[in-house]
Image (cartoon, rainbow, N blue to C red; front, side):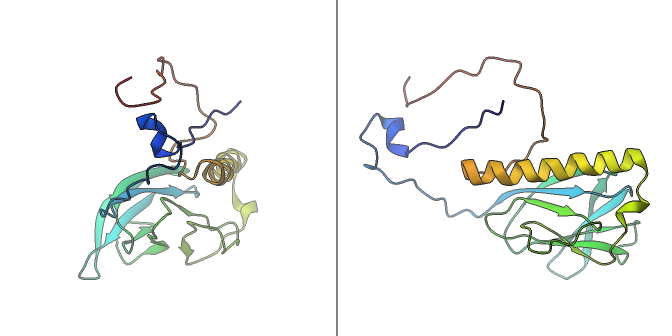
Length: 176
């Protein structure tokens, strides 16, 4: 059972007729960026600065993810070591896409958010537990696509996940 919030027409927040108001789109282009590591390797994440050099952002554990604030046009990459020239996957941030992933085991290059991979790997090289972790992240990506198709928003969490523990009060309009 999946429950998802679908953003209603903005007029409903003012208790007005649907379509009476238009949603304002902010000029600010900042966005969330989630970078997923679908490998059994510890990855070093870098942001490509204005000078074209890699700036260390942090370490992403095997079969895990990291997040940061970003903008369309930013570039990031994963490296296998703290050597910024040891690139494994490259990410190019685009407007409307917040989830990016490094998957050297599959070749669906048309997938939104897929990194450019330097060297492909054989899925059979994964150990049983690693394959389970890989499959869990692939399921998360598939759910994220369905979620975005349904809600129009990116899925930035992990699927499946536990339901909220605290009561979430419905807020249908301003001043409620």
